[in-house]
Figure 1 (cartoon, helix red, strand yellow):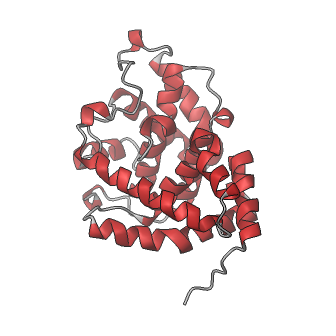
Figure 2 (tube, helix red, strand yellow):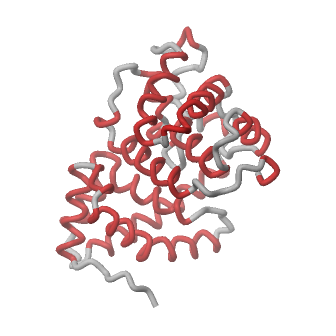
Length: 255
């Protein structure tokens, strides 16, 4: 039996309003409670649906998919849930959550070349991007350093450099490229390496909208505070880096 009490409809609307107004809400005590609500009332049912689709997905990815869905397009779905005629905004979100997970499952059959982590109209070569690659690496590091343990900063810089010069070739991370990336930062755990990959290259289901490197490639003046999806991705990165501190650092443990 769960000990997480369901938010009242009023509290649901208050939380959704706070989320739309400022993604930093997720770092507050009420924001943590809101995440618990998402996990408790949506993740389990979405996991069941994913199993029925034979779609391998982790609970954290489902939670992040829902949060990104609520935040994108200036919080359109969150705003609709707030004003929905139903007495319970969670009921409205449940319908959207099923659509988001089904859409995520659908990308498995899409050719990798149309799912690049930066918009297709821009090539990777430095002379066709608006920002020098070295500057992209530095800007990404400056954005992540404040939410990364200081003792990991030197290897964070090395890993970001590796990821920049070895852009992802497929939708799913291949074991060989994961191991190669991890060799650049042996002090990181496996899950920490994945957290850096997700924020640098972008995470499913909105890779372009959550990739810091992609954002800085297109605009060196990009401010994370101006993008709710990137801000949410960084907050997810911060939480995962902390949660993964005690994980495995063995290259042989990559699956």
